[in-house]
Length: 150
Image 1 (cartoon, rainbow, N blue to C red):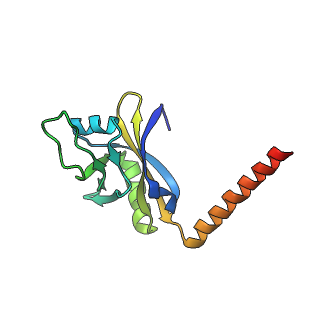
Image 2: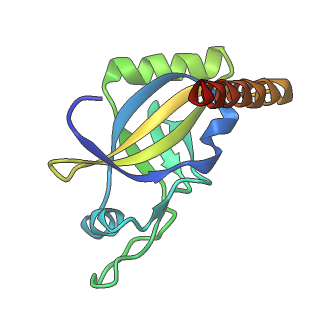
Image 3: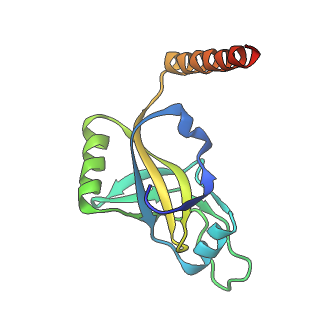
């Protein structure tokens, strides 16, 4: 990641996917939505990304209404993602040919106050993949404990 980012929100269900590639995309937002996101009033747990007319769109991303704004757009409206053409083509190709999912991972705030979203392209983990990952984590934890004792 270039520049400094502050993590605003993480997708709790992203660990159920085996992510192969990650991208950082901009989001098309209204002014009151940006203020609400800066305050941390956003959730991407139920969000997903689809292609409409060759453009990536994030659906079901919840941005709470900003209190001090007279106009607030619908909290779960669809929002366009801003990526380079080559990145869009690469993501679209992987999502269609290799039956992979496009998952929002984190909502980021760049130091110049731009809101970005980190998206990942990957497959859903099988049950045995999840079990293997848990076993590996336990082995590493036990190894660290043994190193501390000696």
